[in-house]
Length: 326
Image 1 (spheres, rainbow, N blue to C red):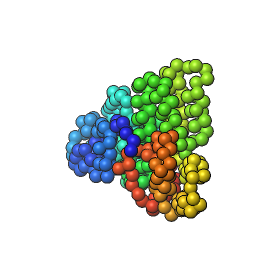
Image 2: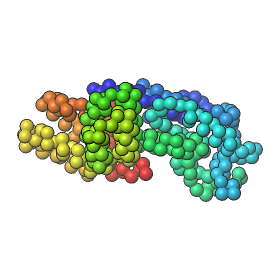
Image 3: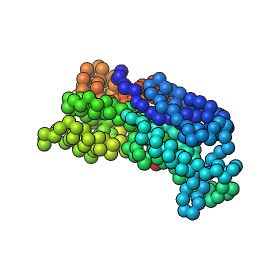
Image 4: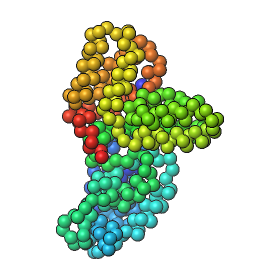
């Protein structure tokens, strides 16, 4: 099993940490609860931080003269500037953050699908936007993994979030060490994972690591980071994942019986059709890696991109629903 560094993740404080929602509730999130063992969380409640208290009257985003304002309808209090000031101060103060888990559709924390209204007393929403804090997060950290607890109930979305989170955390540590060997090792161990995400970016990353121009580590790490972000910007297509599986099969094809290969290809076909998860095919390959003692594949993050205890199996959420995170 791989050893994983602990990512630093900013989380909405009402998710599994404190009773700080407007009505005094705390929200249960199995994803956040399970991550506590593997992640260093930094909980925050922007609405409490600007002095709204618990419990409090709800706030909403209102469109006024072409501008979104954060208003407390009960008394007409406008807290927009207070929230903007807090967002800037807080996000400028944190260091080495690796990701964010925010409250679903919150007017402060939501990063998408937050309703906005035509007036303080308007009954119906007229559109959707991001919350003030959630929007500030996306603006300052456009390349980091950002999700909400609602979307993390989908195992495919959660898988991509965790993969990106733990991969970028590992790279942050490589940058901190400043060792060319560590950068090369990181690239080598992530080759199959990056192949699944983007073959084009994998080629660019390989050229950077080759360092034919004799650049410094700092220069290389900066270039590498840009293309690593590009590679991980969207979840891999299932067809790309299948290409990686078939590529790995080539390492063992002359060592396997026809029945073993047929069984493996059957699992791949079932995955292609959305009838099963990736796990049967992956576990088959992992058994071959141990059986044939393939050291290169044994260290590939593709087979364990995040702690195994965080894996959830839900065949109903196959790649056939992969458009959900758009």
